[in-house]
Amino acid sequence: MHYLTDQVVKLDILSVRNLKKHFGGVKAVDGCSLKIDAGTVVGLIGPNGAGKTTMFKLISGFEGGSGEIMFKGRRIDKLPPFKIARCGMVRTFQIPHALTKMTVLENLMLAPNIQCGEQIWNIWLRRKKIKEQEKLIKDKSQKILEFFEILHLEDEYAGALSGGQKKLLEMARAMMIDPSLMMLDEPFAGVNPTLARKISGYIEELRESGMTFLIIEHDIPAITKISDKIIVMNEGKIMAEGVPEEIKQRQDVLDVYLGGEG
Ligand SMILES: Nc1ncnc2c1ncn2[C@@H]1O[C@H](COP(=O)(O)OP(=O)(O)OP(=O)(O)O)[C@@H](O)[C@H]1O
Ligand SMILES: [Mg+2]
Image (cartoon, rainbow, N blue to C red; front, side, top):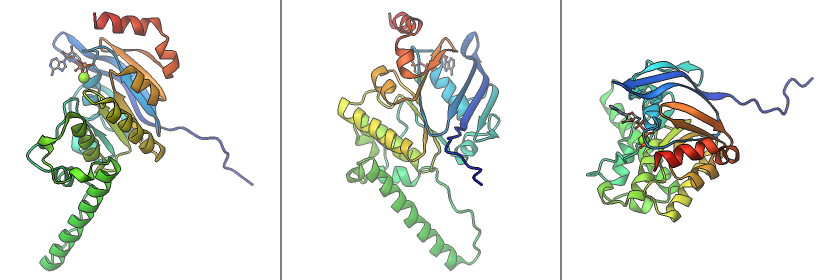
């Protein structure tokens, strides 16, 4: 007898309840709740100052606030960022964070990685193990650079890259922890249209391999094209949520954008 069915059971990878962060009188995030299904791309949009980056900081542990955050069934809202990263969540920054005086390859090799924690007391064995591990990390870094088509830049200083290439480097670094959820803060900002299309392609390819994305973006055509769901924030609150076609037609969403940008 078959107990398994063809029905796909969608699991939330991330679930946030009543998240709040106030800076003095500014209610940056003001009681937000959301759920993200595993293996989907979710766009987070809203005018400047809506609270999107603050939401990312709260979810990834870079900022403390109140509310409940569950990631892969585990409560993470009291954990420090490195522990959250170890669970498989990673975020990139609105302003790229690459170490400019290091090469592209070094940036990846020095990114947080899942190291083998084995204790080896024999010094020779240990040296051998470290060498082996370094090789593994180098191979992995180069594979990731190849995926993002920037392997030819491996020996360039990160500081010498263009804005768009820095965005790719950020994503490549983020891949080093084998994330299950990647949160991108404006991946298309300051990126030329050709590279923006490539970035969309990488996101789609990674999603097909099972990764989940939460993406803040002001480029509405680009984000609606790749998202399964769009969440709209305004003044610290979630004002709308739905499939892109629905959100694009909502007058209140258009009004907020027009109002916010004068
Ligand atoms: N560290 C902070 N101290 C004080 N106020 C802050 C701080 N960080 C954010 N804010 C305020 O919180 C509000 C939300 O900011 P946030 O950066 O989250 O917006 P955003 O949606 O990411 O905007 P943008 O699209 O411009 O990046 C803004 O009013 C901002 O000025
Ligand atoms: Mg922001």
